[in-house]
Amino acid sequence: MATTAQRNHLHALAYSLQPFAAQLDYPPGDQRTTRDGQWWAMSEQTAEHVLKGGGRLQADCSEFCAWLLKCAGLWHWNGPGYTGSHLDTITPHYTDGAEALLGALVVFGGGTGHHEAMVMAHDPKGDPLCVSHGRPGLDFLRVSQIAAYQPPGVTYLSINHL
Image 1 (cartoon, helix red, strand yellow):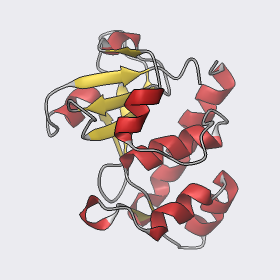
Image 2 (cartoon, rainbow, N blue to C red; image 1 turned 90 degrees about the vertical axis):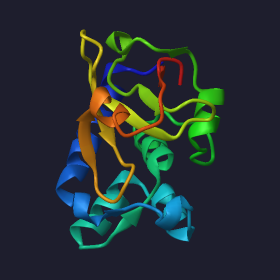
Image 3 (tube, rainbow, N blue to C red; image 1 turned 60 degrees about the vertical axis):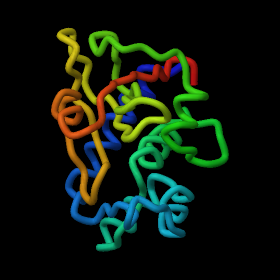
Image 4 (cartoon, rainbow, N blue to C red; image 1 turned 180 degrees about the vertical axis):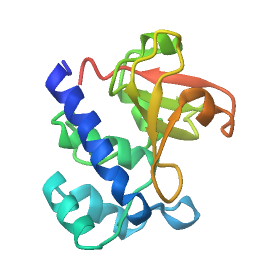
């Protein structure tokens, strides 16, 4: 069960990366490379050290979300998986954004998904604020803002049972 402390850790970690957004790369051509694996293997403290030293880190959207969950002690798999595998393994799923709590994953697009982000702030009106790493940098946007440039479909994945 995701605790309040773990959810708060996710929030703090995502916002701690914001000053280093220009140092957060996205895999060229949306194809993972060894650079992605290097970030995945890092602890939160090592990543902070690399970024404060001027280094760069690289991950795609689903690796980024899984890494945040790993740092908060919520990821129990050996690797980051990908958006489609998150849809397969992280349940329950729901479509009402008003139910989304801090840390919930948001998958955009049908099938195995096209993009993944993480809820940073609950919104009882159903348009939660998310952290998104779908390109170089880091964005804090509402679900509706991200959905505007994604294929149709928004699915929320609960982290309650991780």
